[in-house]
Image (cartoon, rainbow, N blue to C red; front, top):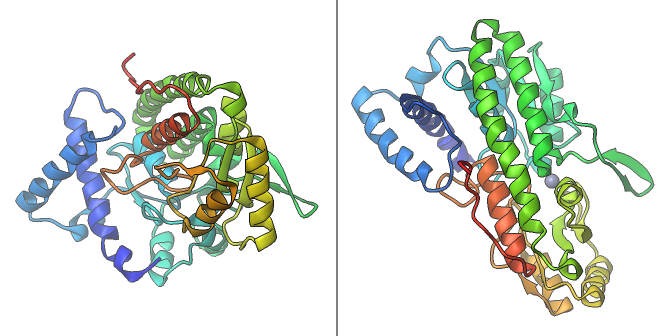
Length: 343
Ligand SMILES: [Zn+2]
């Protein structure tokens, strides 16, 4: 994490808070689907100026503070928490949780939390060490509410942390978030329950929709090749087998020239139409693999472990799943029908 992104950490939190307030004015709070977000940001800027506030005013408010680690968790938690708590995410859009190096401010943020919500299964190792060492008692690894896929790496079994790839698991995470918020802040339990119900209704439709989209890919082209091994839950849930990846479930390792060649051979032999880069990883090596294998690199990158910047195709959990599904379906020869949560 560089200093520049820390600079907009507070304004972003304010934007999100105001976005929630504006949303609340509507009769029905709904997930921020693409483009809707742009309008909200515009409205927020006006709101910020007119209230003359800034980061300070929102931080000195009386709302309890929930600190979340990854951008995916921040988004899911905001959906459930609504206006009742201040949600403060440590990672920003595009940050890679595997290799994130905490900055001193993160200690301050964590220690100020009434509740810490993190992924677990070692997704964000440096932050998990800080969380475990923190004085905050209420800390919950919500992805660990989902039974993990066990991955074998060099003879060692490790739980795969990327559980959100299966939308049913995201529903389980929303339920867990609802439960821990209700336990910590019981006076607002009814609100968390209602918000979670609304979020789950969207996610249930999304889950069915993803399966329908992937099913349009011709059977012999249903083979996924990505940079790091982040799509096993998605692959298993929606029947799109992972043929191979350049690196394992963490992004720390550097693949050898031999690994690159082996993967390129595998892709060529299996006649995979297209392979995928990821938004949080330098695309240089996967581009080399595509060139060596003589296949296309899909025109859009996949959102693996982080949602995208506000206004981008993947700027919420729901939007990242939609964007990934569109990218995969188009690149592997399927037929894409846009997601409509009102259907
Ligand atoms: Zn990952």
